[in-house]
Image (cartoon, rainbow, N blue to C red; front, side, top):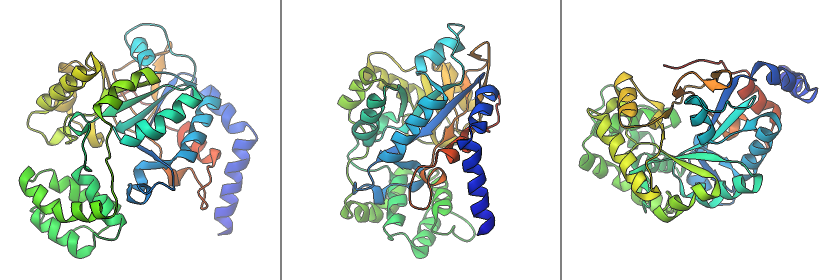
Length: 344
């Protein structure tokens, strides 16, 4: 306990003294930082208790993060990053791009107004088949069911067996849910829907609401400073699809129909990719491709040396204290010291 307290004090001193920010200004001047959010909700929102805590930040924490970004970075938009990658104007020192994944309804109702208030641009990667969807995605149903105590060990065992899993089932925790989800991706869609249905009903009874943006909200977002990229058509990890190019082409075409032009940016669903998936993303026309590799992207004369960029996810519990208060030194340590790596 004493050691943990001392460590926290030392982190606070390193940040408050200015030593850590000064080091960051020098070390990361020629590195692009891309941060990744998913959901932004008020803690009082009834959806808060049903949302995956690993992918949800409060509106208070989100505002604090944006203030932190303005203080320590040059926040840029995706058009500037794309232009620099293609030989155009270089990025400013310590550039940072804000991204959000999936196309959650709260990106329009909560995140975008806060971003506009802060005067900061962003980039949302939308799952095209999810736009206007009235119900949660099946994998979110499982997470929400666990959070309301509806998915216990017996349920996990039944689902694991129903999905054809071998050996003992994973435990009913966040890591176990992810293992189950990975297994269920391989199951026929109709069979998977039948397995999930009881949990979908339980989550609906607990008050789950529409989860994704509508087409009208999507079309209005760019004018508000939130550019739109693709997160695939179905959100299925591309390394598990026999024809990833078909999924990507459908997504780019669908989003293009809504937006007036196909998006130039793409992020891999679940952060998973292989050489075939990467090649497919390039072949269908994406010019900037984002991974979940938690690294910074080195710049040469202010320009990325690759169209493939890493991102660093932002999780509420990692940057707040036990009382839920934002701790800037924790976010500084989370971001400033990341490895810079050129992805190919």
